[in-house]
Image (cartoon, rainbow, N blue to C red):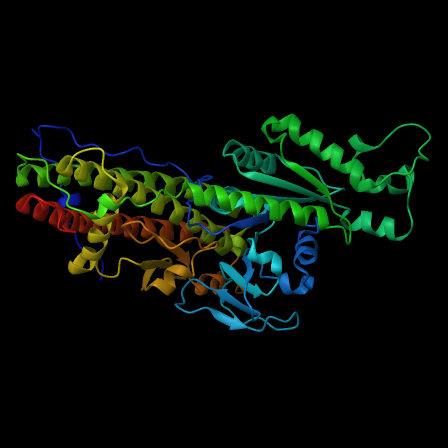
Length: 520
């Protein structure tokens, strides 16, 4: 049953308030984020199809390439463990689907592709960092690019693999420009590509023999008999083309990668992990002893005024987030219709819309987190004085988080919204259900609210891949209804979340004002 209207966030703000309601600036789209000190170190691998990315990663990790195969559109997370395991995390399920880690092990029969597959192997390199292999850049689209940027920001490094006979696309240059603007460490690996490896295997050692695998800008003049390495020549051409479009990546490191030459790249990645690990550890501030002591309330506060100001700010933030998400869903509708008519068609609609819902979930989570932090900081600083010590803020946030479950509206906040084959939305609650939605799970969350999760159920794949369901008009109508249902459910979910924050944070602050000290 859908939650009904909530008084604090659904009723318009009465006029005549002493101070207009305010809300902190909210992110308008998903992008590269700064990694927290507790985020696990990881290298995100990306690049176009046919560049040999799987072969590069397999050689780095000492694995068979077949072990790195995943369904189209899924991410592969490779981390360290003593016993090899492999599991698929599928939206709509609370538990992962486990299967064998050997290359010949058949994956589970799934109604829809998993958001991620986790492979754990005992390779020593994975003690330094995890590896996240992502879908081909040519298949990402707008939403997939945003999801990739979020993963790169939290991981800390990007390994972009491109072959000698390929060129950067405009979408890839745009993605790399955003990564460069955020200061993420970028590594480039240039491979021979399919044609280049075949030519080298046949003994081609001259410019005119290997020229088929070298872009025109990289071919040298003269007699054409000077011995060359096509990968080395292409590396210089690729680097020049990249720097012409993204000059800020001049410090990125480039590596020519042959069939067995990965030592330099491996050493560079280990060196990055050591430096980045020290940087993140030093960014974690120590907890001062005084932060666990007595925290007094600012004298002369009126409990009613504290509650009124909190109500107005929460109402303003919830309204802004609902407006932002409605606008983003309108943009998603335009992109989906365009792809149905001119791109993937009805058969590709589930994968396309699921990726859009993944990016929407990240945006909604970031907006709710930002607003909740601002509300807590401003209200607590008004009660306890500014500046607010980090330890005191943690105590208040923990108290608010523990108090969420005390209110009927706060139960099952960790709920996944699943789009069904009938263009409706069903709910599935539980921490496992939320975890199955993450393409790249990070550190344990310290935010007050659980993440927002939206995905497509397996029935959507079965419906649009079935015979007779290839009508573009029917797909457009279905997508419009589904997105409208998502908008209604998300609006209700945002209202419910901020109503619970109002109740829980209000109780913590009111108790503090009544007793003169922070009781948390």
